[in-house]
Structures are given as structure tokens and as C-alpha cells.
Image 1 (cartoon, rainbow, N blue to C red):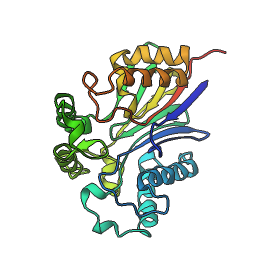
Image 2: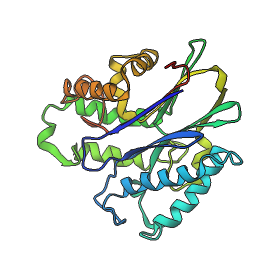
Image 3: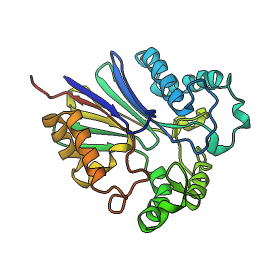
Image 4: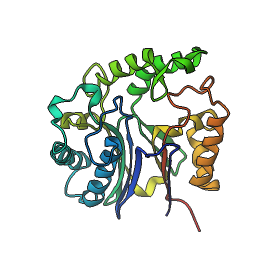
Length: 280
């Protein structure tokens, strides 16, 4: 089996992260803070969060005596305890809470388990050519209103108030963030254990798996050029680093976000590509 991985950012702090263990792999995509407030010594609480989860999952994911959901729920208890040393979590407004999408793949005996919570994704291709895409589109659906505003507002550069957004856009983003882990909104890794049960879990026999890709939503612009299946082919042929370079060129070709709908010109992008069928 061949495994390749890459994480890339155009910012000072990468709010994506990936990890590998003996039995598994994972990616996390920290949701950009909608406030200037930071409580941890790192100066970037989102970056602190994904790094905390990386260490926790590296230490615990391989224990197949527990389900993936059980491991994440226990992690939330531990995370809240650690983050609670810096701030009273109960005092935080909804849009001030930390959150991240998470995708996990783990070998458990003869099966490959997969789990997704939030708008990260897993693409699973079987040896018979079937390609399954696992993600949660609820966040994307909520963000579509802001994405539409960005593409239509030609004068928005003079209206920016926070992290590249106008006040009108920020109002909607804050409203959407307040729907986090609520029935009328979307579910994501944050401070609430109940959200974990809303994630998507699947398993497939390892002998049936050809390729598996874990990715954050920063790779979305690649969908203008590739289907999920042809993306897998290009990852096999070019490697993850070259595909990330291609992603950045696509973004540059639409610097003002007019044709490729997205919130940021350059989002953090992370891939873990596992090629079970690759022959050296």
C-alpha cells in the first residue's frame, strides 16, 4: 500500500492538520474563528484545537476495543477539560466556540472503518470501480448565501471589516455559526458529545478497497477540473504535492472568487491519500 499526505496553507497559521497511526489516518479542518479573541498561549485557538486533537488521536485511535465514536466522545471530555483551563466554555457565545470537521479511517481486523463529522470528506473507491463520497453538505448549504454575495458584490473590497468579509457577510456567518450542533443547523466536532452520533460511519472489507482519500474542504476548487474518480487517478499518477500545486493555480485563476464559489481565495488544504491497489 502507498500512502501520501500533504497539508498546505497561505496563512501564518495552518488550521488544518492530518495524522497517521499504525492502524489509521485522519484529517481535521478547524473552522475559522469569527472573533479576534484567543485564550490559549498559542495565540490561535483554532490551531491549538487541531493540534490537541492530533496528539489525542495519535495516542488513542488504534485502540479498536473502542469504537471511533467512543474515542471521539472521550476526547471531547478531555478537550473541554484542557481548554476550560483557559476560558469558561459555558460563557462563550455560539460563534466564539471552537469547532472542526473531522474525517477518520481505521483498519479494524478485516475492515476499513470510515467516519466523517462536518464538511471534510472521504472518497472511497472499491476494486470494482464504485466511488463513494462521504461528507456533510449542511455547512456548505448555509454558506452558499455568503458565497453568492461575494461573487456578486464588485465593490466589496472597500467594505471589508474582518478576515476578508464585509459586515453583511459577517452577520450571516455569525448567524450560521449559531446553528452549530443544533437540529435546525449542522453538526461538527466542537464541545458537545451529542454531535458525534450525527457523524457518518461506514465500513468496507479491506480486500474490496482500491483507494481512499481523506480531505478538507480546501480542495473544493479541484472539483471544477476533476470528478472524484479522475481526482483519484491524478493523485495516483502525479502525487499529492503536485495536485496541491494545481489547486493553488486554479485558485489564482479566479482570484476574486467570481466563478469558483468559495468563502476564501486560498483555504487551507489537506490530503491523506491511501492507495491499496498501488503496485511498486
